[in-house]
Length: 183
Image 1: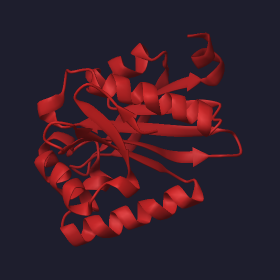
Image 2: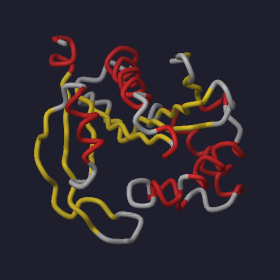
Image 3: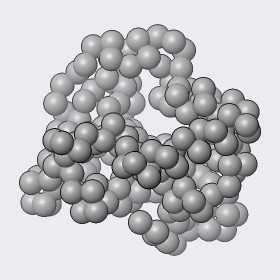
Image 4: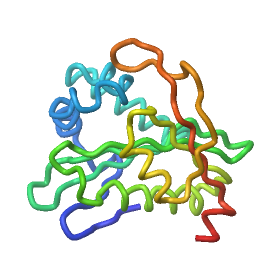
């Protein structure tokens, strides 16, 4: 899924350097504190980041996760991270997660990146269902989900431990392949 757009492109795990991913996380630490606590925990130092990316290589090789990185084509900086996780092959289900650098929000980058991820999930991975889990306060992520045809399937209470260590509710959005194909 190598995509090039007017001002950004999508790179795969083997196309990035650990230092640039570490920089992306450090620049956005406060921005993603509550929504990507695992990534933050695993990227405290460059050495941690190298180990985290190495684990992700193994997850990709085993089909347990897929990782994509958004790059600004002018500066060549990484500006976002989108991923497929919680892959359950026997029922054809996975979850997607995403963030874009605070300075690049509101430019349609995540909207297009999620479209690309869905094409990959339903096409290449032959998934039957893709989910997005989002905080009730994260209206922007909810808009991304509904814009792509996801249905709010309910609230899971105290389902997610955020970066502050607090359990919080999440909205669970789902998109079936049959609904995706109808769009």
